[in-house]
Each structure stands twice: as C-alpha cells, then as structure tokens.
Length: 324
Image 1 (tube, one colour):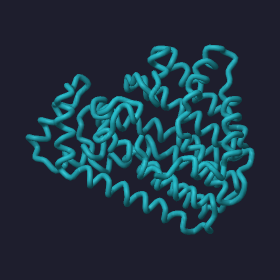
Image 2 (cartoon, rainbow, N blue to C red):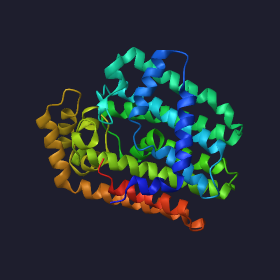
Image 3 (cartoon, rainbow, N blue to C red):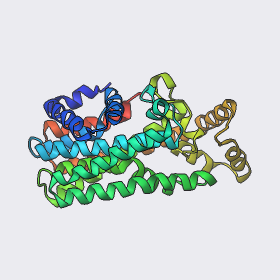
C-alpha cells in the first residue's frame, strides 16, 4: 500500500509553510469564526489539493511564496464547499467527526462557509497574477454549476454517464485541475506544461470521485468516516448505479428509482447494492477509473523524471489503492 507520507516527503517543509499560511489567511476578528475554523483544521484530512499544487510547482523548481498562497486559497475554497455540502446533504459526520452543521446548526454553518469562501476570494489579490485569478474564478463557477447540475438530475434520477462526467468534472475535478494548473502558473510554466498539469489534475479528480462512488457500494462507515450508502440515499447518482440502471429494462429501472429517496429503508438500499454488485457494474466502474488514471499519468510524459513527478504518479496510484 502506498502511504501518503511517501507522497508528501519531498514537500514537507512547504506543507508546513502552507498550513501556517492557511491559518493566517482564514483568521477572523470574530471569535466564533476562529473557533469553527480551528475545529475544521484539527481534522484537516489528506490535503490532496494543496499537495497537488505544491508538487505541480516542484516539477519546475522549489515552490515559492505565491505557490504557498495559492495552495492555501484552494484549500479554503475546498473547506467552504465541504461546510456547505454538509448543510445541503444534511450530513452529520465529516472525516469521522461531527460535521460543522451538527455542532453549530445550519445558520451559523452557512455563514461560516460563506466567510471562508469570501476570505479566499479577497485573498486572491495577493497572488498578483491574472492567470491564477482567472483559473480560481472559473473554478468557483464550476463548483456551483456542478452542485446544481447534480440536484437537477437527482430529482428525476435519469442522469446518464456523459452528464455524470460533466457533473463530477465540475463538482470535484475542477479543484484538482485548478490546484495542478496554478502550481504551474506560480512557476511561470509554459502554456504546454500548464495544460498538461491541468489535464492531469482533472483526470485525477474524476478518478478520485469514482473511487468514492465505489466506497458507497463497498465501503464501511468506520473506515470512511461518513455513513454508508450516503450518496445513494441523498440522491447522488454514482457511476456504479448509473451503469446498472442503464443495463436493466424500463420497468425494473422505474422500480428501483422509486426506492431511491430520502426515506429509503435500509433493506431497499441493501437490495440495490446487492444488484449493483452482482451486475458487473463494480467491475465496469473499476475499469473506467483505471483507464482515466492511466490517462492522467500519461499527461506527465512531457516532464523529465524527478521526485515531484514520481510523487504525482504515486498520488494517482494512491487513489486507486486507498481504503477511505
């Protein structure tokens, strides 16, 4: 198994600078906001997006102050989306801890998420780079569009694979893509190199979401730090489910659609999971994830071998192997 520590090793000092900058950038004059932010940062997760940003910069040279600042802004945007997602999805757990909305309820959580997001936007000026600003502003748009696209199709539950990829690209992969591209931008990389890293990040982000889709069918709450079957119950149509639905007749499809709602019984969800597992949809999803992961790695072929390139490849393989 690949350890995330192996991926981080070449940028440990940069990650320390990043975490210090993140704390300073998110600081508020309102004590309640600081308490909430400290709560979030106590269990900061894997920090894959800032790691991706720093490694993408390190392919060219040592990450600079602009890279550190960019990584902190990206993470702030990510944190804000998590806080908002937990409100929208009525999620009680985040990374194994009570979610912000569980501890502080919806109103305060919504305002805290808004604050973190607006703080990230106001700090963008520190980058003093119009290309980076354009990437971040476009990413903010994509995040909102992806979330709304998901809600639009979740109601009627007729999302096909092409719409799913569009939704996942915006909702999840856009931040991975921005992380990699901005890492390159802060090092004044060429357009060709920027595009390669941007595409690498996008494909990695799609693979990352597909891995989470598989956990919804095969994972466990104690391992994942979130309820099992969560996305199915909250109307997030995942790739294994979409593929399974495309293989069955209309009558059967309508039957299972009727079982997918907020008040779904556990036995109904278990029945759907069983059918997905027996249909070959898991194998289809795993192959899809493997193919797009290989496509991501191929984007790095234009770069010379280095510790940073090796770590980026390990990051793709880590996603394929991760158990939470």
